[in-house]
Image (tube, rainbow, N blue to C red; front, side, top):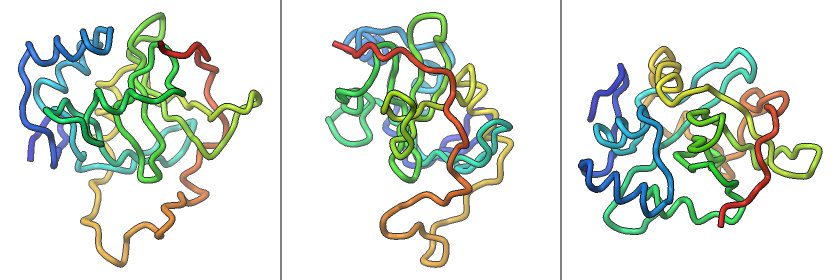
Length: 185
């Protein structure tokens, strides 16, 4: 367990140093916001002790896991998870919810630092998966998680249904302001 910003993280990737984070930024052709860079250096992904949180605008939401920098290309690797043709320019896929909906961190432009949830089950007026603005910084997102109730250990009694369909109460009511549709190259 790693403690960071009043949260505990389990299943984090092995520690990384400044050189590895800089190499990852170079490979992804981006610069991480300072708060997210600090998270990678001190935690490097993992499962937060608090999963479900509440926002004024969207109600109850959940994050299952944050990606870290790994030494192999696997499903928890930050670099591997950027190989998504639908990932817009300037967005970094940083984690997912229990239904596999991705969380994005904006890494360029005026919205740098914003954290979004992409709801692949709800389409906007253009037929694209809806994006919901969660916070305007990664640090703020962790603060929201730190104030929420810690997750209970998963048992047969509280495990999600086999198809991982989110409950209706967990679905946001309406999408956030539109993000750029420009695709990464």
